[in-house]
Image (cartoon, rainbow, N blue to C red):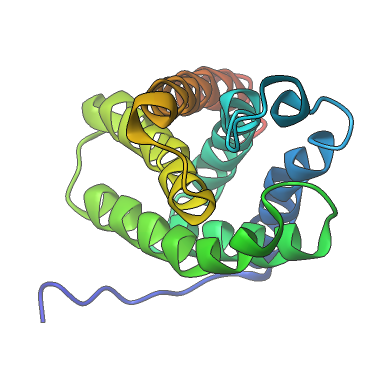
Length: 179
């Protein structure tokens, strides 16, 4: 009974989940404009900048809702909206839906018993989870680990930095009474 959390979302929470989920999928469209894969010929290199933006937007959204299930919901909405946008890793996006759901749920579980002083650590882990999506892309396209590992590391670091910027933005929004 102690592990099961009651999820009660207001209409405000549902609106925030929808907006931040959709906004966090939007950087997938940027890969049509700034296409590092076309330059480097290594699938997943767009994740270096995309995961920074995605983690930042998603973390502000997760903190704005601030309830158990928000990370799972925003991650899932993001995945389904990203399927609609042109850009990104194409057919691999379908495989990222369950992965994003899982990462969101893991983040929610970490939040369930955490203290606010650990939010930066959880944000780093969330950003790293975002960056690890590159593993699926590179496995799908058969990229050797020697070539793919630096891209995976850069993308994970980028996601962690983006999520930490999201913590800063969230703190400023709270201090100014916006949230």
